[in-house]
Image 1 (cartoon, rainbow, N blue to C red):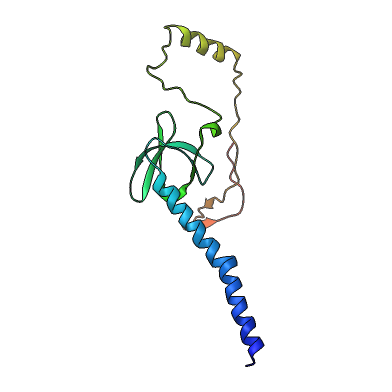
Image 2: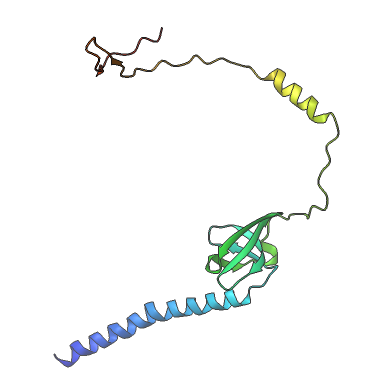
Length: 150
């Protein structure tokens, strides 16, 4: 092997290291730093585009509240990044007590929807099925004729 061929192989290995291996190591290091900075109460974005608040953290999993009272469990690696203050488009108010429904209001709504709904009757469908006929010999023989269902 001559010297120029050997030099080209070494150059390709060095270029491959700086273009492929080193950037991947840098991304892994950044992802670990993000994972280490997470804490309960942080607003985060998940890999599926789901936004939520971390409620509980384990070594491998996190419980994320995506809306009031709805918690989902994810692996920690599913967290892409924590959100900044200005990234939240919607805010959820904490509901301290459930909404009250006045007596009689639902009865009125039900009667209005029942009077406006049209009731239609659907005719039963007749299907073609293979029916066994019993000849006088007593053994059943299948036929391809449709059954007469009157």
